Length: 260
Length: 318
Image 1 (tube, each protein chain N blue to C red):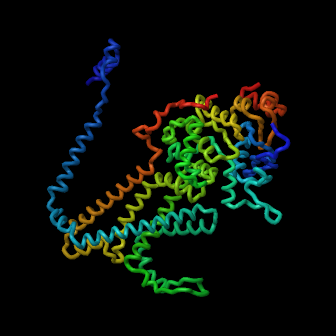
Image 2 (tube, one colour; image 1 turned 90 degrees about the horizontal axis):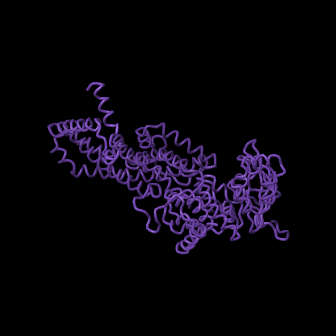
Image 3 (tube, each protein chain N blue to C red; image 1 turned 180 degrees about the horizontal axis):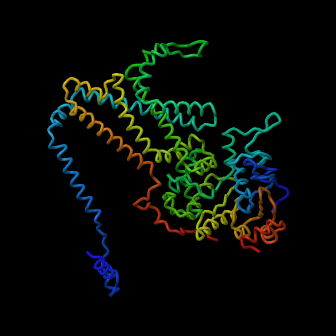
């Protein structure tokens, strides 16, 4: 839970994001501390994924501000107002985050190892040999040391998602973002991905996870945030949020996913 | 065969008396009547073609072969090839640039690209060639500078426009517009997740296109692009209207003198066949090269076993 003395690693202050009339994210504030796991849950269309995507600038924000390690993300102050940062600053800020997508988004024309090494080589100028050593290490970490020369279409969904996690890890991000990482997987493949994420949590990685896996959230998360209609309606320790929600909407949601 | 007897035969062949014996019978593919009909058709087609090509004096095969490698024809052929190569190179560069403008967030670039594509699509390539060739009649001198204000350099248009350069310019701006739409289609065909993955990894757009998106895009657009390039080298025959001596013009000049029309046209056709074969070979090479990761490999990669549905969970399981 929150440690009072240290400044939060990630801080969202009254963040809003509109799509036309729809308030996808509506005045959301939250803090995430170093080494914690935060799970965001809620019905589909509640703005969880949009919120996650505003953090690494895949979605621009319409109001509020996002701070990482004390630095404002995506905007800079100039003459009493804010303007978007330049593309190169945005890219540097993006490197704070490692993103894992619902649909993996691996590069289909590269092998597992190449998927993991390409960004360090292109972005950080890491030498191929070093990148491959790091790549082999992170692939082994997700249990795919023997699949390095397979192309994504030769891997199962669970394996592809684990490669995607390795690809994010290879960039050594300070915060890992997971956007429904198991929602596109067959039921029997969900656990292998959750196991990798559990392992990362045990090693102290800071993670922000949008998920529908309530048991995982309950076991692993330090804090669970429940969103509905773009707002946070419930937050706190996993046990409290999932089993004793106060908001009526939250009670209904957890009942509908089979948790009483 | 009467209905009744056929029905008897069918029930005999599907009712099983000795299950084990029947199960042990080998399975062969069913040879249908369709197969035999196509064999007969094929044989007939071969007969027709043999009659058409071999037992027809009017081809004058010896005339065809006497011209096929003659100096004038080869010269015309080389002109066709250099015209095609230059046109393709310039055309594709214009195409990539136009597609980039068309997808740009800047409205001026977008509008300019749309206007260019619109005009080029409307204009027959023949008209395009003539307009470029006679551009001097429209604009006698080319100026570099700001219109109505000043000019830094001036060149008489006819010094820039030769038969050859008019052909290259005319065909290249034509190919540019068409290939621009192919490139744009290729970009639109890429899943948005690929762009997002590149962005979230901090890869610059140029590098992303170079290393990740470009190769995927080339795989998708190669068939349509090959079509355009093949169309272009056949369109080079249009430059005969401005009198550039490429393959077809050369052939026409010869048969205008000796009236061996069909044999000389065949000489051109044979060379066009050869060029098309080369282009198609290049196409299949490109498709193989950029198809990696999309087709199933026959040989399993050397370091791993065949992937299983569950995969391995070494070290990651709780």
